[in-house]
Length: 357
Image 1 (cartoon, helix red, strand yellow):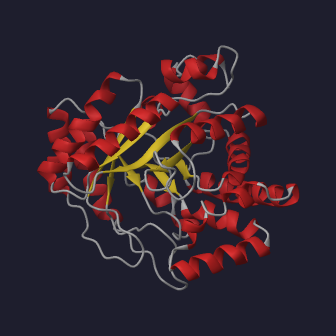
Image 2 (cartoon, rainbow, N blue to C red):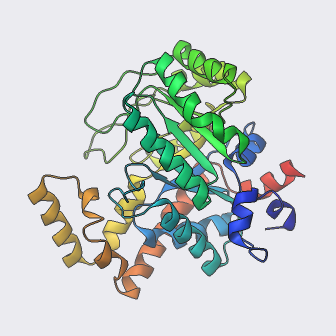
């Protein structure tokens, strides 16, 4: 990528990368402010198993696309969550692959779903410590998710945790309405509560780039034949209401949505699309059969979702044969190409460079 984009790297990230690095790690604020009027989505990839990353980077490089890499508090966090990644090892892994593969397109590293499920001091302080650790590690984007709380409390907690980030060169995503998991029902976010939430944050000096809403999509794998119900009209109504505040929509739970339909999101104000479970599925398809059999057996015996087997089997996952790794890279590359094209994100890197000139 040209030097003019490298000049937009945040100070804290530039310092960690080193003077000679060509890795174009930007703030999501820089990227999303420049592209918010464009009908495209930045693909944000939740990485639970590292082998998919080079394939995603290869697709983004070839298609000249902006992407993001992210990890949620439950996936990683200070204790490694269920993936084994802590903030610094996640950053090191992403940047390491970028250096190793010669990946030069702009991207951001995002702390996804930094959740605050209740108002206890312990819950709030755990998220505060995670934000500090991710910032220190070099993350350039954050999602403060206090959506489990009522709107006034969501405003108060989000302000408390996010206001210090306004002094940093990073982006901010916030949430209204709990984004549920497959098998759990939820209530659609409304225009009124979205405006109340965003206007309350702005009044407090907190300016988000993105608002994640519950519009019917869910996290996780849908059962065969189960339809994905997403209210795009409600999504657009919320977008039009919060757009005057400089806020666009983040779409969670994209796995399971037919790829050919994803372009519709871009016409309804969605500028960031989270793809998480899909990359886990890709990795699982490419792991050796005996390893997957052991992981499935462990999950069944523990009564756990298969994703929870990642950390107990991490050493085995990270030491699979080179042929299996390459199979995973190739599969991720093909999937990433399809998503980037469906997100209308081809050539978004060059478009970003033009916008920032």
